[in-house]
Amino acid sequence: MKLIHSLNKEEITEVLKQFGAPAFRTKQIWNWLYVNKVTNWDDMANLPAKLRTQLSSEYSISPASVDEAGNESGTLKFLLNFDDGEQVEIVLIPARKRYTVCVSSQAGCKYKCAFCASGQAGFSRNLEAGEIIAQYLQAASMADAPVTHVVFMGIGEPFDNYDNVMKAIRILNDKDGLNIGARRITISTCGLIKGIEKLAKENLQVELSLSLHAPNQRIREYLMPVASKESIADLLVACREYFAETKRIITLEYTLIKGLNDSEHNAHQLLKLIRHKPFRVNLIPLSPVAEFQGERPEKETMLEFMDILTNAGVNVTLRDSRGSQIKAACGQLRYSNKDK
Ligand code: SAH
Image (cartoon, rainbow, N blue to C red; front, side, top):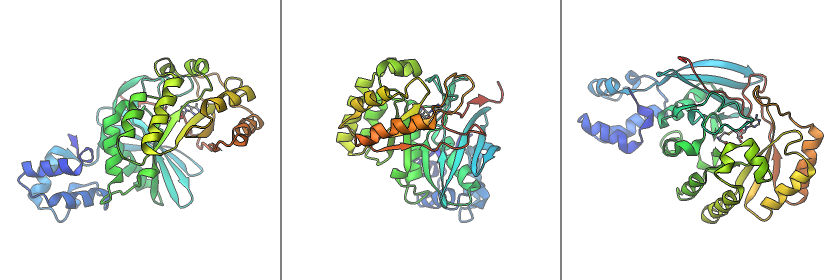
């Protein structure tokens, strides 16, 4: 069955037309889906019964079943099981009186970064827009405060599923529905230049994060196979063009790994790469992943690394990545398929 949440308003109007129903029903359906967040066609009280039957015979309104997968002082991990056996992990992260949801964009990941759990079991398929929206709606139904922020930092590479991710973002952003401000939505990419170039032209004020993780090409290639295709030099050019087009600063994500990319020398190398360019830096302490031997640096080392950047005038933060006990921290989400 097709997912109703994969359809934008124009597409819903088109479906209504095929069913012989008037276009004004689109607004009513949208309101049920995204303001009332109903999970049952029969709850759409102002729709004629016949239309509800027509819609329910072709469109599913709840694409997945959910399993709780852990709770660590309020950070909640859950799994969505899609009808074809694919599973993705999602994390609901509390902030003061609100939540951020970390969503997955693909079942699996092709990019196989050495230190990330998400690509270990390979890649299966892209998620549909509706399967991304389902993650948000599921999170919202479990949260005891509004889920105001969405980060595409779960399983998968959002720019490798560009169209569906963009469609989901426009649905999340829609003023008549979930109404999540574009600036509260973050796309994180391993560095696909085509994606950066396309996003620059979307006229959407979303946040862009780039997983750099290395101060030079050699270390980046060691950690991230994608680096041999998309060089740091080319990435920096794409980022500068992105900034010229959007006037939006890009966040560089840099996972600190003991003895690998965390020295003072590395900090100065990074500084040289990014000085006078439109970046802020988010340092991430390495989260443990069984398949990767690296370790998290001492706190002292991380603070020294941070100071070097700060003293040079770079806006730097050290991410407080929560939920490592329940394997919900950055890079720990794992793809699996329950039928395999
Ligand atoms: N594919 C996208 C989305 C994943 S976002 C991307 O690469 O950006 C998840 C973030 O966590 C990325 O910055 C990723 O590189 C980082 N990450 C992966 N494994 C990690 C680990 N073991 N510890 C800390 N961060 C990790």
